[in-house]
Image (cartoon, rainbow, N blue to C red; front, top):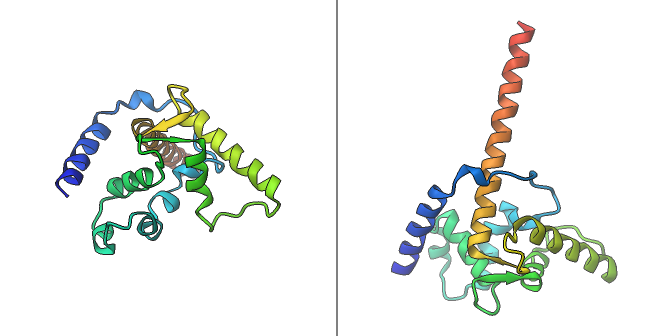
Length: 164
């Protein structure tokens, strides 16, 4: 548990230090399910994969800890990187996503999704998402989402002022 506390503190410091300059690029698209909070924050799914943790321990985890365990639980070769097959397995395991019933269409759907994730988040182009790349991509998307929210709010206020 001490390791988790240190990891959380380190991750928190890292997230704080990630510069806002990383917030370039396009916004999230529906095809990048790997960033979907419903998927990466699914504590029931995490319990299925991490047998050594009790439900109580999982329920007490911060969102960052849940994400780390989600990532780690899909890292089959334990190298703190997810390759395309590990990403595909993580996504495919989530049954609540609608996908084509035909095997070939389903494989095309998943490979397209993995290609999108790698194109968006694999900053060193090694064909894998490292934990650090994952964290940076998540932070970048949070910054982009916040900027978009602020922009919409400013536009709404501007419209209200023009109407008065």
